[in-house]
Amino acid sequence: MANFTRGLGIDLGTTNTVIVENGQVLLHEPTAVSVLIDEWKMIEVGQAAKDMTGRVPDSIEVFYPIQNGVIAEYEITENFLKYQIHKLVGSMLLFRPNLMLTVPYGITSVERRAVHEAGLGAGGREVALIEAPLAAALGIDLPIAPPSGNMLICLGGGTNQVAVLAMNSIIAAEIDRGGGNKIDQDIVDHVRKTYGVILSHFSAEVVKMRVGAAVEGIEDSEMEVQGQDQVTGLPRSITLRTQDIVDAVQEGLQLITKLVRRTLEKTPPELISDIMDRGVALCGGGTQLRGIERYLTKELGIPAYLVDNPTTCAAEGAARALGMMDELRRSLPTT
Ligand SMILES: Nc1ncnc2c1ncn2[C@@H]1O[C@H](COP(=O)(O)OP(=O)(O)OP(=O)(O)O)[C@@H](O)[C@H]1O
Ligand SMILES: [Mg+2]
Image (cartoon, rainbow, N blue to C red; front, side, top):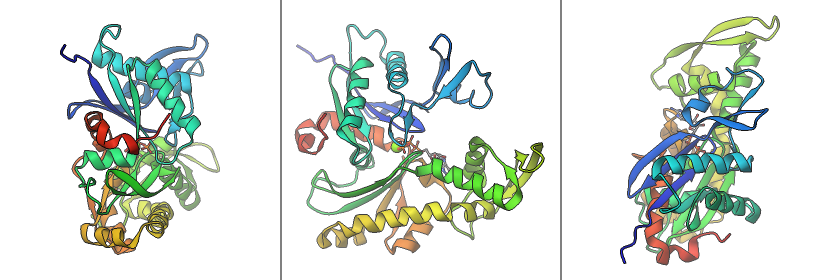
C-alpha cells in the first residue's frame, strides 16, 4: 500500500516557528499567541498575535510560549502547534503527519519530553526530536556524514548555540540561553544609560534590525524611535545611529566568542584543523546583524561565513532528517 503519511520538519523557535515539507517552507511566523484571559481563549496566532504586542487592553495577553528555546507555556505551545499544523494539513483524523521537531542542544529530558508531548497533542502521528545545530547543518548541506569536522554557530532569539559536527553527530557543543532577546535588552539598557530614554523591547529590536551592526566601518544610518523620558515619564523621541547599536551589542557578541572558545576546548585537535580549513557557518536570525561575519572572523581567527537560508535551515534540515532515520537514529535525542 502506498504511504500517504506526510512528514513535517518543525523548528519551534523562541521568536519564530518554521514548518517545512519536502524542502518547501510552508510556514514562517512568530511563535506568538494572543489570549482572552477571562475565557482563556485564543484570539490570534503567529504574526497577527505578535502585532498586538504592547497594544492590547488588560483583558488580552500576548504570549511567547517558548522562552530561551524551551516550552514555558505548555498548553499554549500545544495549541499554537495544533493550529498551525491544522492550517497546513487540514483534517487530521485521517492524515496525521509525522513530525520532526527541533530542540536546543543540551536541554533536560523533562524539557525534551514536553516538546514530544506537545507534538503528539498537536496531532503528530509519530514525533521525533532533533537538536537544532544538527538540523541546521543538514539544512545548509554541510558535509557532516564523513569523519571530518564542521562548525556551526546558530544565533536565535532566545539561544546561542555552537556545535562541532562529524559523522552525522554533534561532537562538541555549547549553548547559552540569551540570544537576540538579550541583545535587545542590552540596547534598551544602553539607550537608557546614555540618553535617559526608555525604549520598549520591540523598538530596540527594530532599531537593531534596521540600523544595527556588529562592527564599526559598516555603512552608517540612523532611525528615530519613540521612547519614554526616564525622568519625566513623558514620551520622547530619539534618533539612534549605527554606532549606538555597535556600542550596545559588544558585550553580547563577546559572549558568543566565549561560547565558541569553550566549544573548541572540547573539540579533538584533528577536527579543529578541518574547521580552520573550512571555516564556521553562521545561521539563525541573529546572523543578519550587519558585519557579524567580519566580527567573528576577526575575534576567532577562523573564517566565518553567512549561509543563504539562515532562518529556515533548521526546519529544512529537520524535514530532511525524516528521510534519514536509519543514519540518524543514534544521533537523535530520546524522549
Ligand atoms: N537584521 C537583523 N539584525 C540583527 N538581528 C536580527 C535581524 N533579523 C532578525 N534578527 C534577530 O534574529 C532573532 C530571531 O532569529 P530566529 O528566528 O533564528 O530565532 P528562533 O529560532 O526563533 O530562536 P531560538 O533558536 O533561540 O529558539 C531575533 O532575536 C531577531 O531580533
Ligand atoms: Mg532557532
